[in-house]
Length: 299
Image 1 (cartoon, rainbow, N blue to C red):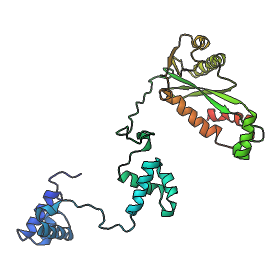
Image 2 (cartoon, rainbow, N blue to C red; image 1 turned 45 degrees about the vertical axis):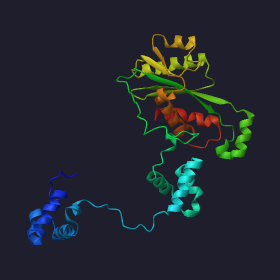
Image 3 (spheres, one colour; image 1 turned 90 degrees about the vertical axis):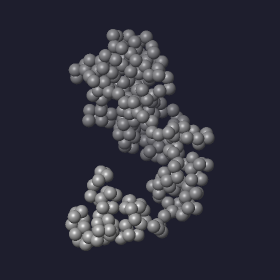
């Protein structure tokens, strides 16, 4: 942004216009003096004659007419659906597909009318609860091993022949009723380096969690990382004496109840693990998917 006394600020335009109109300078001389084209000098001089000093301010670049703008009636329907049904832009655009609205257009309409994101409003009443985006408090420890995040993810096994991604939803639901069982993915992620160690285990009992931590700690030690603190949730296996004995002198910290964000690095790793390994390909057996875990972790 230019300063107040720059050549073509409001003050500079007024000086140029007064030189041409009041002092009778030729347009070419005034344009050369202020370092602008003759056309620019003429424009400001004409505006000064018509409007005086008030015409030296910037005008809006918005066009005088917008023939392709969404009709007010349609905009009101968009706002009505947002308020009454609490739908997002994509669903509103689909509902009003006869109007040929794109989700981006619906989003602009909602923004223009000051509609807050759904996450900022009360689900029951629609009353706005937040004034803006929540400020994320991010932390990262200075040295490897200062904190290791530990968590477990439950993952359904794939029946032989494939699950619903291969055979369809109907067949997948029938297999689900047969009780194929689950894998429990135990994960440990170093806070500083993001080095991760994961295993597919059959349960999440205290002895299983304790044995996993001993192997994970040995893995970190093999790459030169000495673990000082471990962060887990409040699961029963992590509150057990067996897990405490496996930790030894390592400090054990727990998240606040119902606050998984505190262990967010492990949660983020699990999301990436599921997206890029578990759900990345359609496998016809659980064993085939299991064999793909180690290469993915090494990558």
